Amino acid sequence: MTATVNSPAVLASRPPVVVPASAPPLGLGTAVRHALVMASRNLRKLRGDPGQLLDATVMPIVFTLAFVYVFGGAIAGDTGSYIEYFMPGIMALTVTIVSRTTGVGLAVDFGTGIVDRFRSLPVARSAVLAGRIISDAVRMTIAQFVILAFAVLIGFRVHTGPLELLAAIGLLVGFGVALSCVSAVIGLTARSLPTVDTIATLWMVPLQFGSSMFVPVETMPGWLQAFVKVNPMTLVVDACRGLLSGGEVAGPALGASIWIVGAVAVFGPIAVLRYRVKR
Image 1 (cartoon, rainbow, N blue to C red):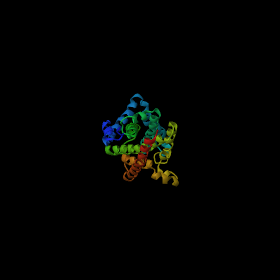
Image 2 (image 1 turned 45 degrees about the horizontal axis):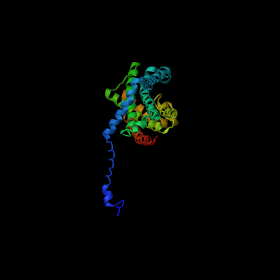
Image 3 (image 1 turned 120 degrees about the vertical axis):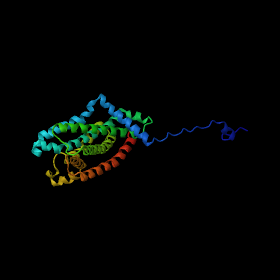
Image 4 (image 1 turned 90 degrees about the vertical axis):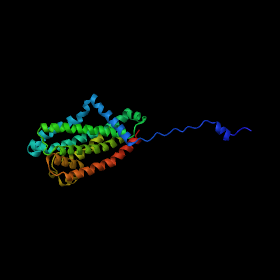
């Protein structure tokens, strides 16, 4: 009798089925290393195109010259007093400008198809997103020292110490990272690059102008003061004023830190989810 298909003799004659081993999950150390490689890739672009630093350096300098020497006398009575008040604000404005490019950069990478190539490689899924934010944080840090050097050149002085200065820069960069998470969500959600650029700019306008960045809160209408006092931009700027020129630090710094942690905790996971599903 002919052996059936499932008889022991036929089964024994078949070659063994080899089940491919699944790729081992990437550890945290590997994911961090991949993110740093992606950040290095983004930063290397600055060598061939230093103009990418213009938004982080030249633009804040232009804003400083315009506000200090055009509006400073009208706002504070003299430019010297306004420089002391305004420079922590322009340092905060700088991180908002740089953070906008997080969403734009992600939109460009998806548009060119480079992300599809990354996805075909054994690269941590979080590396592209984290690398973009890390590289922008480095640009923010560079910009802070450039703006600070320019501020000293036109008369600004740090009245505290080096530790307070580093704490102010750290707070500003942390705030910038939180804004970059929001910008990443915009860049991974909007359907076109012009839309990303527009939304990433527009949503920051209330944060920038509805704050104590340019003028004291007391000079604003009462209905607006309620928003300005809880605006994270106001808290960051006031904390930096205290760290650089002396004054209250604990209250504004605590409020700013709560906003920063909350924004990263909310928009960070959303950005990761949007990156996973975006095509």
